[in-house]
Length: 366
Ligand code: PPS
Image (cartoon, rainbow, N blue to C red):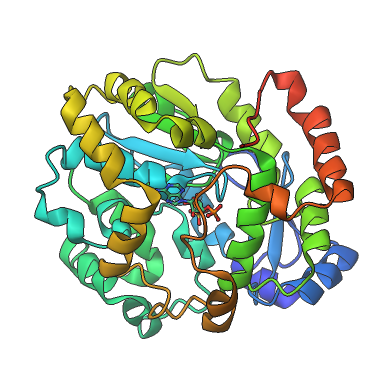
């Protein structure tokens, strides 16, 4: 562990080091590492813990954290921020379409979603970033990198440099919490934050970690729920992620919304976004966008644009064949099919302990 972390910790061995955000980055304890190694095959360089907050990231995060913290934001930027599996992709597509494709006639809309709307910290997930493997990871992305970042080295952050270089207005996806992002984020740009009830998040995140080799979870569902309530999943505590957003919810540049509300009445939520983003769309335009960004339409369109698990090497084809792909169900309340009464009680306890006091009122689906 020391050697691997030493490499990522810029040669300081096992000494924890401080990020510009003020967080201290430390290796996992021996016991934690043994457990993670047993259940997760997708973290070849190990995970690191950030204090305060107990955020959990691949060791590669150390290479990008300070540059993400100092990312140059622009007043026309919109950041789509969520904890994993809360509906980022859906929100990204809605926001990008409202801003860039109100009449659904922009040819750019056929491009891979991360070309139009890059994933800020994605580089930390790559296992073996190399000049050889990165461009072949996905052709549309490689082409976009060459277009937007000519003469730049992808090893210095493929997605990070793309996020910086794409033309305005930029719509940028992140799963990072406020405390790891530029401190002036809300003063300069707008943030759309999507939350989702933790029970559906668990089910969706479990599926994601099984189909994706960047996680490659091989443990049980019961253990996965335990990882969640112990804040031991990559990206760390959902409650703290949400708390940091909730504390800022009255800031005029933050729009906080819920997956369940978007699901039950997309047009109502699009109207609110229309006011927040100042996009001045008509009712007819919003109705069309609600339909265009529905689960069924997105599933087909994303595949055609290159977000295709059958081709992308990051996805485990056998698990997908058995249990479905990235666009799994897109529903609220599916947790009822998966959580036993004991597991349900465990999550209820987590909710009571960490989010009820904040005033968050989750909806749990039909
Ligand atoms: S990720 O990998 O963390 O970025 O995933 P994220 O996009 O945040 O969340 C994925 C879940 O959102 C569902 N999804 C949708 N639901 C409804 N409508 C639309 N258009 C839509 N697009 C994506 C996706 O299916 C995942 O949820 P589950 O419950 O697993 O189906």
